[in-house]
Length: 124
Image 1 (cartoon, rainbow, N blue to C red):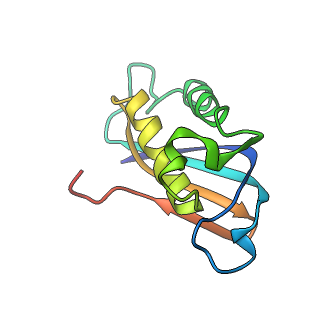
Image 2 (cartoon, rainbow, N blue to C red; image 1 turned 90 degrees about the vertical axis):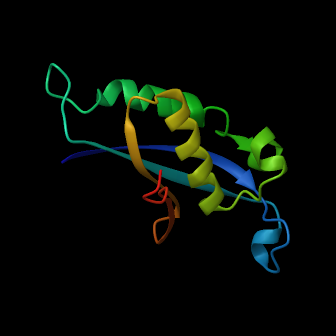
C-alpha cells in the first residue's frame, strides 16, 4: 500500500454556534491542513497522484475559506464550523473533485497542539 500526504494552510475567522465559552465569540486561526491518499497501484510514471496537482486542487478549495469569515461560507451556514466539520467538508470536496483518488483522511490543525481528523468509515 502506498500512502501520500500533502499540507497546506489558510487563515480565517469563525465562531462556534451554541458553544458556551470563548470560542463562541468571533476569533481567528491559521489552520494547517493535511490531506492523505492511498493506493495499491501507481500510475504509469510511479505516482499515487502528482503532489503538485493535488496541492493545486486543495489550494483552490481553501481559497474559498482563506481570509474569510468561515460561518458565511454556504456549507457552514448550516454546519457549525468546528475543526471537525471543516475537516469533513474538505475531505468531501477534494474527493468530489478527484474521484479517481482514494482519499483516506483530512486533518485540520487549528493550533500547533490541537487537530481534528475526518476519515470515512470503512464502508465507503
